[in-house]
Length: 191
Image (tube, rainbow, N blue to C red; front, top):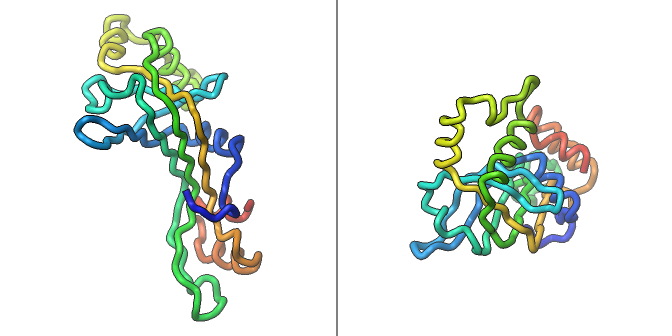
């Protein structure tokens, strides 16, 4: 994460950001070196991140009991020094939102895995919502056999919200205007 404290996100904001993004990269060390898996997550009431991966994924056998790092990336953008209109000594930068969640991973049982799948659907499906029990039970069992469920129990949350906060308000406004309709602009205007 960025070392400047002006860009730090507090833990509550980091949790809300991860809940809102719902997807990220999970990094773990394996005997073959570091590996990553892209995973959808749901947050449990006690703050754990539940996710699933294909059983055939090369990270799967190394997750239970491992210390891992989950990273949720939000919108990001290159920032041209020309947009600052603040003189010749400005340099390019990158604005972004990102949260790292470090913790220990543990396997979850089949009922919890099914709950994780249904929670994902409940979060992202429009009404009427899809649920596992709507498909043929044999197909549902085959689907659940093909994936493995886990939860990451956080030991640290590290969030960065780098949106030119160290620049004057008028400079930040010019940068946001230069970016047009970019997804980062509402975040920049709120910062």
